[in-house]
Image (tube, rainbow, N blue to C red; front, top):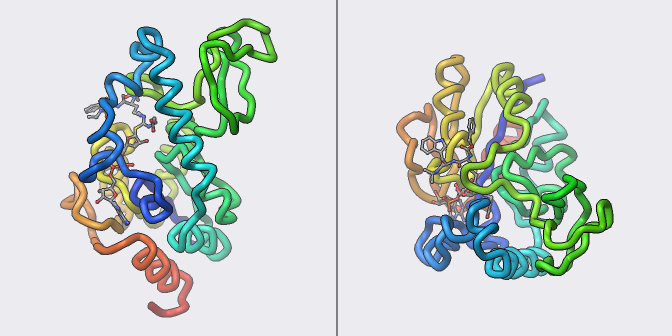
Length: 231
Ligand code: BV8
């Protein structure tokens, strides 16, 4: 069975109404990532960081998966798929993807900075939130990987990449590392690489094949071809 490694980014959730980061009007156009998505920012101003993630969590709960998420869920049924996402939303899972590796964490999970306990989180967090593990207050944070923090499961990611026959990036600008470095790693390993995006990413030149258009159009078309169901 073909072994496929798919890396997704904010572009795969854009048509579900979840803002991307770097596009015009994107999240980082309205909020400064260095003031909101770093451990230093959380230490300096936890209220504002909580407000930012509480807003994104409420938006996520209102959102629904789209045809791109659905196509990638179908793909899992026809190939040996490793789905690695930079997204902190749960739209891949809600579309039926059996395995999703969240390398930058999950918005619907909270983690205690004191004891490390993780728990599902669908409501707002604040500096008054008490950890139900260590019963201390003010340590609960969204279980997301901030800039300067180590992404999750890098060893698993690199092991699955090393055994892949095909590397596909969907809806990512290739601006954030280590994720942005995986296409180069795949090329070095002689793995075929495909980019599916609205526009050329920062490392478009590193891809063997490039397909540009909305993820809800291009991902289903690509998956149908891969599953031999014609374009
Ligand atoms: C780390 C969670 C130490 C929080 C995020 C090497 C060189 C330079 C810098 C670095 C480097 N190595 C590390 C760094 C520093 C830093 C980094 O990369 N900085 C950048 C800004 C230069 N990286 C880190 O800090 C990482 N940690 O390095 O730890 C380490 C690690 C390994 C080994 C040793 C030490 C941690 C980075 C994770 C930060 N957390 N998210 C949150 O979400 O709030 S990153 C966040 O931004 C996302 O998770 C995602 O990763 C990134 C956004 O990128 P995309 O998802 O691609 O989104 P973007 O908006 O940029 O692009 C969307 C694309 O979709 C566009 O191309 C657009 O055309 C397309 N599109 C839009 N609409 C559609 C579409 N495509 C199809 N259809 C559509 N409809």
